[in-house]
Image (cartoon, rainbow, N blue to C red; front, side, top):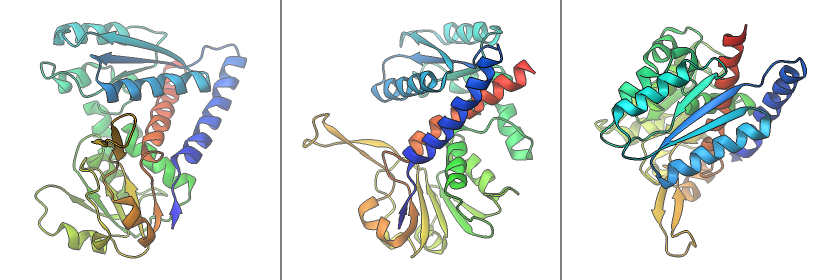
Length: 292
């Protein structure tokens, strides 16, 4: 069993990005600029946004964080996005999800200018991904592909089972793994809550991507020897033994599954770090497209 370490893989991506930013700035141009909008004070969202802003600083990106009260109206948030769309010194816009229930995530995503959609959620980005047209890839699936590339994981001809069909991870992940590219060319089965023979499908899988948000859902009896496990889940579970009062759990029961695998991602320290790497690569791409 080899650990697919997000710290190592993301460090390699960040070092490359930092080198590219240094070259841009030394040539007299401005650095790429990412804006992040945070609505309310959700603890997990606060952590994610802080990590994104910190990483921007580490590699030389400029970042702007916009905090809005949880009571902000949908129209108020949309107007804030429109202002950012019109800012020529800004390359990428990210609205941290989830949003309060009175705000439509679909309207928010559709309002972001497609050329600044570094989260890869806009319908145009999703359509281009489906058609195989170069576009912004949702950050988590993109990060997973970057991890496969970093560790040079052979995927061609393998059977991949993706558990979870969200537009953020599951669906785009199935498209990327089935695509005609170096770390794709898999035969993909996309599973969800209504899949009857999930265990049997998983036992046939060479690669399992668990992205359903249920802590320790995938157990050893669902995994064949030598499989590759990509754990996208990250759930806070109450734990009185921890100072914080909770533990972070993935969708895979790591301790029992890991010995059966050839490669596996840890939680934390795996896909989450690669998500930020994917986001920053999208931001640099947006900058390059906008400043040509």
